[in-house]
Length: 331
Image (cartoon, rainbow, N blue to C red; front, side):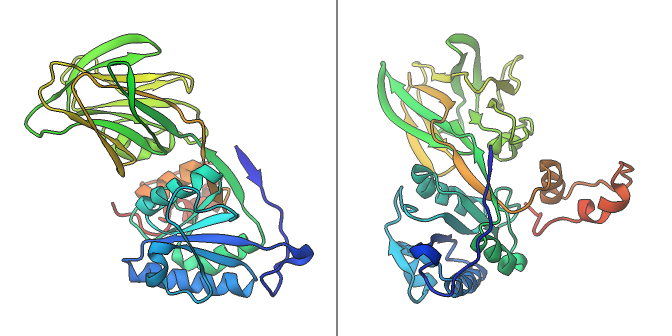
């Protein structure tokens, strides 16, 4: 789902016409000098447009932005902000998603990482990117998330969520994880494996992709289940309804515990007998989009896919744009 934003003219002070104040939150990979340079350049441009800049309290010293408003680095940090501008790679954007999801604030990624699949802009286009935010000239795209619950003996041990994936993995390298897979309340198969990935379409190009799962276009509403190195005849990636409930049960005779990772950031130890349920998340993550290029072009650019020789209807017009990688494409 996308929502258009209409353009408005910026005012020279922090108070917009009609008494409106505008606020944006910055989240950055402060260990990268190029991120700090981009942060400071963007802050200057937003300030000139009369927009307040918020920064996370634990990043404020490194960013050193005069007049920036520090906020606690916790869920809800984006309260009162119209957008969260993220300076870094996909890992930084996933961290920012934890802060923005509770308030449904859209994220705009400036790619300073490697592939940067979730990012929308490159550092070379920073001035134009800020100008589009100032003019509210962007659309907002909603991405599915996963809600995950860990249950032991019928009791909920913990709950979590993920934008890309939730993975159930073995904690001991020398042993396999013994699991049973359940889909929509019915048992499907039993596997000895290194793990199992639950993924969203957004996460289909992340961990699930590395484990051999399919690439799913973001507008497709579906849940993915991808086994990792499963020792079984029937152990193929599954694409299910967005209304499905996917379950991994860690067999009780398992000697070693497993581990649940959400987006590779948040972790929970899984005792033998644990039941991990994944379903469509109640809250989406919202991404700001500046460009209307199709997802196919993003795949070609981010993975540097060879398309020389294409003779489609737009080949003469699009060849240069389609074959040229957008920004950094190395993994």
